[in-house]
Image 1 (cartoon, rainbow, N blue to C red):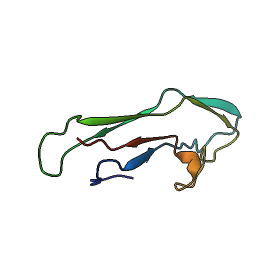
Image 2 (tube, rainbow, N blue to C red; image 1 turned 90 degrees about the horizontal axis):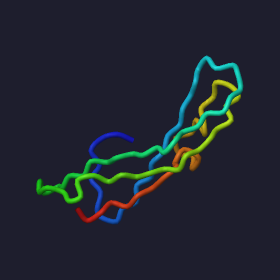
Image 3 (cartoon, helix red, strand yellow; image 1 turned 30 degrees about the horizontal axis):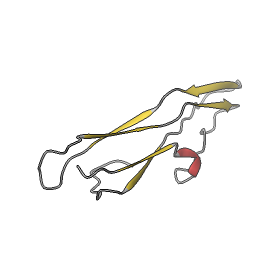
Image 4 (tube, rainbow, N blue to C red; image 1 turned 60 degrees about the horizontal axis):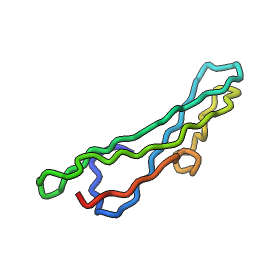
Length: 91
């Protein structure tokens, strides 16, 4: 998801990824190491947010890639593409 999201403190946000290698024909193992998403926080009122960022860490994961399909899923709403979550602080 992209854009200007207006969320209240305590709202849980999910983070994740998926990937595709369109011309892959060989099986291999792909590792995503220590992924992190960093959200920039801003107050709706215009006041300075403290903290000004929300880092959401995700676990290192390995994937057995056997072709050119999306990993871990090609369906954006699948739970497989959400590897982490964080709660919006009262910034």
